[in-house]
Image (cartoon, helix red, strand yellow):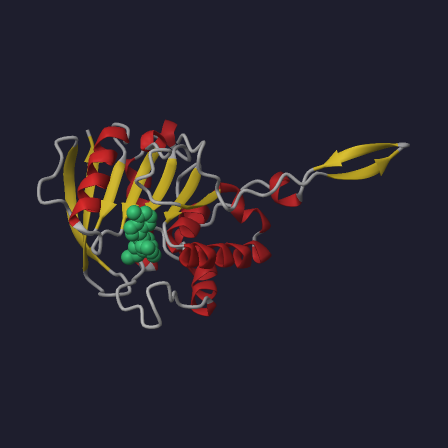
Length: 238
Ligand SMILES: C[S@@+](CC[C@H](N)C(=O)[O-])C[C@H]1O[C@@H](n2cnc3c(N)ncnc32)[C@H](O)[C@@H]1O
């Protein structure tokens, strides 16, 4: 990921504290940086995150009655994490990034940061209000698991920004039912050009013509907040 022009809003300002130490000073590192990232099993991750999200304000970004916004449900995230896990050769375990393109309030990003077989979990969301809710959820999570943020990056941007290169993706999630045709076309072209061989793409709506760079592995019906049986296409980059 070359994100030179986009600063993750989760990046902690480099605040170094110093302790007096035998007449000199010793640099100490904030606790969140010294703790190893916690890896939870998928059920534990859902159990930790569900109460945080039920207390989190609903998004109002599209007006007082935001009827078009919906989120992925925990069993769908469990399916995704386990699918990637099974499809991954042992040498690649806990390597590569998970991307949620259009990450909303950050459910998928936080979940994969806790339970996914990834080195990092990245969310990119264009609406500042939703990104801010994702940050609030992350702050709440860090109250119980201080190291939880170490694998998570949240960006306020469009996922079409050319600073993002998806060459380090192991899995990409695209909740794309509401994307217009132009965005849908552009994001599939970008992912076809940039995702590495063998990486997985999960999306609710497949393009009318699937780019030759992908093969379809299957279609499932899985729960989202808008329906218990949303189509869920699984593609692999060739
Ligand atoms: C259906 S929501 C899904 C949220 C989240 N992925 C989940 O499943 O919980 C789709 C999100 O994509 C965002 N979005 C749409 N176009 C985008 C773009 N070009 N760049 C970044 N985010 C975008 C919307 O603002 C919305 O929050």
